[in-house]
Image (cartoon, rainbow over all chains, first blue to last red; front, side, top):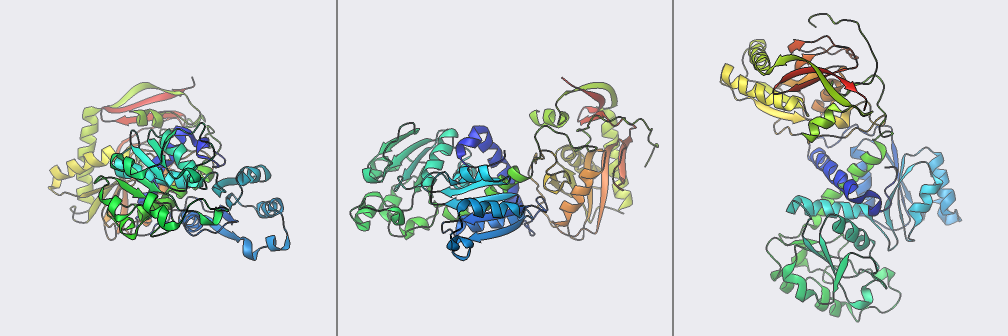
Length: 331
Length: 189
């Protein structure tokens, strides 16, 4: 795997591989010294054209725990303000010899363009309304580690689906892993077309609430709204927010999730965010381990199928090279 | 089983064809018992000794040694497991994926750690394991127990306890299971 641009690139097997590997990195993260020398000498640059707290810090923490070097590109203090184009910026960064570029941009498709301009591995850290694959992977990992598997679970993704790259990636990942996904949103916050989406739609949160294994609340992305899509925040909360009253009607082992940052009192009440069923901070913690797994898969694996010369993993992996010198009887 | 098959499949593909049985199950049991006695003798008891099995081949052996040590000295030593994938020196040269999660639920600092593996070959896995152990604490000493020493070392590493020294060709393969030790070849499909 060279790039991680979309959940669809991974497929079911790829997702399983990342989630399996994440177990190892969760263990690494729990050690007294949570750092392994795996990606020594590799450089990971985060190229963020949009604001971010958790994704950028999470990727940088992940890279550092793998002993990679990190560079941070912030648009405000860069030559972008002098009018440098995206392509020139990417080519400049690649010329410095980076191994991976984590990119976030407000326009969909930017990571694909960048992948064509550089030899480095490109990780999509969120492109417009389109995709956010590592968020979907950490969400899937969080559910899987709590419930064993996503297979057969009923997951509601609630709220601003229209502007949500998290929703698009989550729908792909959850359905590939066998979950049944229900979108719950006011009609104005659904995408114009749901053709080909493996989901059902409900307009009323209360009717689906008791049957859910996971309730995934999306952030109301007011910065992306150019028109009046909801009457008011209070009305939104009444219709689609996870209030204390709705929380009480959730099953005892239903998971409450949110990709952050939360609008407390809008899509989620403080009671719900702090409830024992809420795994919102677990999502953040798992994010680091999942991103370690992704960086490891992108940067740690060599060309597939090529054995390394003169080495055997345990005695089992022997390349074809013949030496006949007899060993002395005892070391 | 799938894991064992993967371990026996070289990176280039091919299948393991067994040729000679080097040790049978009883031989293996006797070797484990002898190594247990040697560990007790060398360390003057088991008070500050812990076992760490290398994933995946060393783990069942570490558990057998643990049992044998119970019989020999009536001491219940700690057993951990370690996967060294993240510490290997060939990352980036070939796909290296961990087979299992590392699990060392005790502090190694001050203990004599006996690393346990099934086959000692180039020594690179043991080198990686020594690095990995450092991240879990500072052992008083590290010793190495292997069932088979097949030679062809590429690093200055030697075992402290050996089940059997087995001269091999570089391209042969050694398979250790609970039924015994088999020497064979890899045949390209």
